View 1 (tube, rainbow, N blue to C red):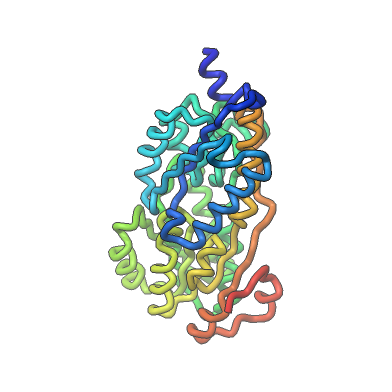
View 2: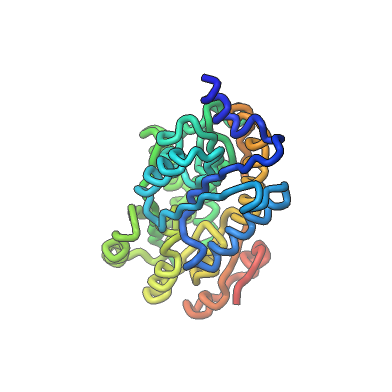
Length: 325
């Protein structure tokens, strides 16, 4: 029991001189192949350094990357647990669930997970209980706003296809309620909302064929691991098919998607580093309240708008936090 409590607290002896901490990170795309991933990796490293953790001196960071394949979460979580890391940082609901199941005695910091209470990852936001805390994201809640922005930017669209990953952890009742809310939002805008699941990168070609067959005239891209990893391919497909698209991360707009409306991952990673710091100093995940994002950005890619023959209305541009050209 004492060993378990020590592990769950992250490191009760954080102030011991000479201790080298071990932080496990399960990311999506490797920084060696993706410039945006490299930028975000530097943000996290610098945020740790600002709190006194220098890689190679007093902290070792074990990094693993799923490359858009959610089936790898469980493999890497078990691997990191076997390395006796003090804390695991992992993003997305499926990733957090896999880590929770594979590393039940290791502190876990969520780097974004939709509705962690409804998904059963934590007991409540104020008192998570168990071994999970961190940042909840608002991705599901943002879908109605994304639909409204897409319709405002491209008024002629009528059939929007929502391309998402394989959800994990939501009850049937929660999933049904979320889908109903999204459909009501679409109906208010005069849109038909279609849905298509793309479980992994290996399903890209078949998914693109399905989009064409369903005669969608716009795309709503979930910021799930697969879509994020394939954001350049998705942007190229959307442009070739002349489909206005909106994603959930700035990186999607940077890859060529028309717009993105979602969380600032850099800001989120700085907060994640603060959670890691608290755990390494002895705090228990069960007692650290889960935070929700406060910074949500709208980014518009003007080059893509021009290529699609769209004139983005001032009402959208005035809301934008950034434009890319």
